[in-house]
Image 1 (tube, rainbow, N blue to C red):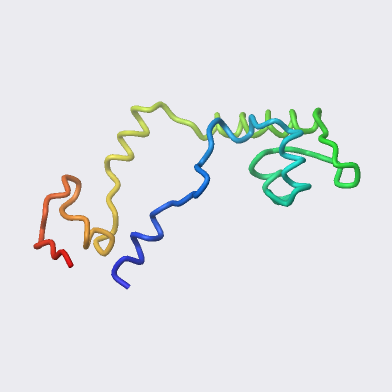
Image 2: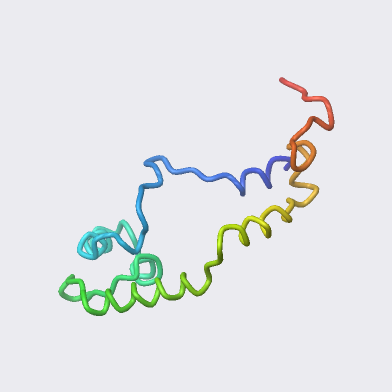
Length: 117
């Protein structure tokens, strides 16, 4: 299908993406979301970095703080100054088949007639 690559690159969220840094979400709210089956146990651990007791449905604040501190340190270790990021980013280019309906890169000038149906 012609648009398959474009669809994979697109995101959709009917309720909106939310706001704020995910590991800063209230740990009690995350536990309530797990209990309500809004998020999974895996997401609680690997995305929200929340530890909890699955039998009592209580958040383990000390362990959660440790998990979130470790995540913050890991992020800091992976980070780089914006100028360095931008220099690398500007060298990137989509694959040619991804550009078929886009135009020229990076200025998006028309490279073939647009057919409107």
